[in-house]
Image: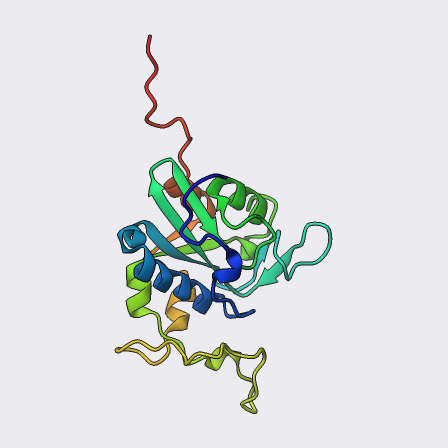
Length: 205
């Protein structure tokens, strides 16, 4: 790809393993600070389902040749500057950073047709500016019953909003009408964000 990316180098992005929701919040924050005119074209995307068992391929934490892993949820960043141009920035994928939407979805989610219904993926798509304001997590989900950390947390303080101490569950929930943003099935997600590169191109007759 040759374009002016929002994040030129993955190494320059804030990243802590197993804190994908905060990694994406930091990407949104970076856009607001450095490219505010693009913020309205950016989204935080949560992937999960009712049972919180979603298979994803091409993940750094995955196993086997296909690098597949089953997460309870995952979060990635999306930039949709034009109707026929959408880029995915996933700090946990083995695909390029960024990857065009169609390639990312095809290789990461494949199809629900070959999966049991309990493994079907749903997507909560949240505008970046909304995510920056409403997301709030005290990281309780990463603590064991004795208070110790399952995985070491980021060095910066927890991201807390003015209205809610901990609302991560509202973002992971895939029930329509609850939580911020819009919820889509995999096919609906593709229909809403993938447009052929030839859309809008007029041919002379």
